[in-house]
Image (spheres, rainbow, N blue to C red):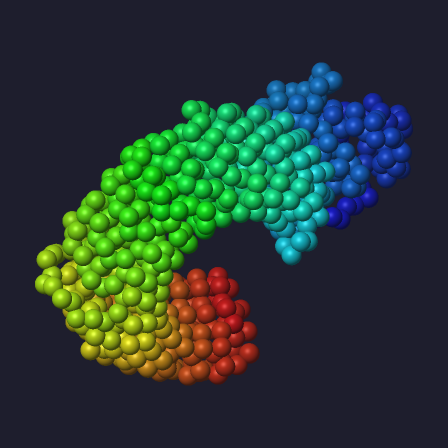
Length: 616
């Protein structure tokens, strides 16, 4: 069901169409699927066929009829579930049970993308899913503006799938208010509604959703130029169960709509995401004053919000339950506003600042002293933050901080610390330093690492200056690493991997050495001998060869699930037997750019490792 091809006849059991017999000549009742009979029925006008199809008692009967022709399918898809069998007195108890369960469960999921998203397929889904438990989730995604789905197809879903609970419409210029209005009218169980790049959907449709789908809990609106404040006001009035809202790049949404939704007495929002909207300090002040239930708050690219807005949000003191805060590309985040957020949001557990160029060590220190229960800190492209600020933050959050992530922070450089370390036995479990170009060549990394004996995940990515001499003391200070990512650390040698295998071989489950071009077979031999619980290994673009892969394959305790060898020119067709042996447990194998492996070897490998996803 769902293809655009139909057959001129159908060979299902005759009992499935027993109610059609009264509309046929007596001579044809012996075989309702005899080809001349089908032609006779097909000559009937749509109104008569509609009345016939309404009397079909089972989903199996409808599916059989839908396979006859596109005309029959589209007619069947216009019948509302409430109209099924309305004029029939012969329905059995089992049939009623089937229809009821199909309507109430709604556990089936259907996903249509690009050219596959057509009205015909939507109609087939509407007719076919009723016989298998009912449609629960539907996603329609256009691709490069190619999408054949229109209001007709969405209306079919609305009529045939009242069990629908989640609907996503992405990049579809051909669906507008009409289809969404039918969803609002028929699908009262709808809980999640996600629309993105749907220019024909306006406030009228969203208001209908608000009034017709009172179970709505999650709403996401992105890049919809004709949806504005009126929609959010209606949502605030009607949808008392709404707990998650995401609004992105909608030019008609402003302070009026956002503040009305946030301050609505009927809403108890837990998750709020606002991105690239024309809102000002007023909206953030409202969030700070009325967001007493908000636990997750994401604010991105709010160009009209100043320091005052973030300061008022923090000082309003209503965000008592806020545990996760993410702020990206907001120039209003300064040291002053950051201190206010720390003072007002005492339950913060995780905070992420990206591209906040006005935050310095002073602001981070003030925030750290106020929000002492922080468990996760992530800074990306916050270039005024230095290593001193990071160490100070670690000191203030010593009993709680579990995760520290630093990405592309130009201020994180190798410098001599000007004060003694005041903390010991840090609870840090994850340390991730990525693409901080000025960091890793001197003792700063060791200074931090030695205070983190409980580290389990270590990500040092793209640190060109990192050498074995710097990394080894860090590895020696950690108790039992589980995940290690050293990708892009060009100056690491086998010595680091040998130490890693010796010190942490009993605990490491994931090891990523992608791009460490000085890593050779010597490391693979150590990995094969010492890493007894390893299940994911990445050695792409390294100096590995057949010898190292052979050592890995003959190891008795290696049971890899994922192996990446992309760009390893030293791996040749002679490794075919080793790859086959490793492939007994593999679910993923990357051989892209392995130019020394012949195409015939690759073909043989694909045939033998049929359960493994092989990238070539």
